[in-house]
Length: 116
Length: 113
Image 1 (cartoon, rainbow over the protein chains, first blue to last red):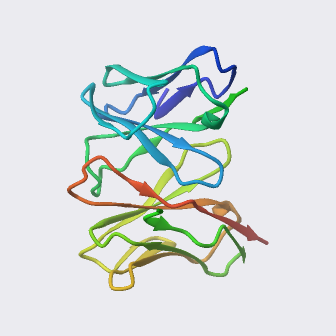
Image 2 (image 1 turned 135 degrees about the horizontal axis):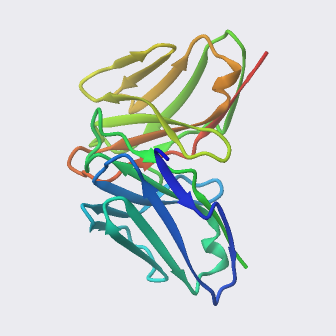
């Protein structure tokens, strides 16, 4: 399989549950990202990893916990979420850090999360 | 406060005509701009980009124009095709912020026959 994949595609969870979102990229990229897209809001960058090291934590609440075990996999662990955390969570990867020609970010299809 | 704004949430264009999608930004330090396209149930896909040293970049039917003094960029699609119907996101970055893309809220384009 090629590109960026995300599982699950849809997730419904209660506020006391613990769940994890998974992202996998088959592009040989070194940088991976988590974004959140809420209704009628722009994509918001949550976390950035480069070569498995976190380089950005964009003031995200601690109930979201990322993990990058290797450069191909990225997880977002969720616990005690709130209903306002319901959103589309998108994973992306790029060859390296930096916005320049040839280093565009490739996105996965996203996980639609609903918190009850 | 949104640094990248797409003030038109939707646009409807007839097939064969030109589609013009607009984007405004507030941070004069942005020096690289991108357009992404998103179909339902898919992630955004990169479409075209432009560096601040240019004022135009063309790729097939897609052209991006950058007006730095007005802090405005636009995406022109000509001729528009039904397959272009999607949500288009504008994004901006500073070279020094190596990891941050700031996105707009998107414009939904519908191309009708």
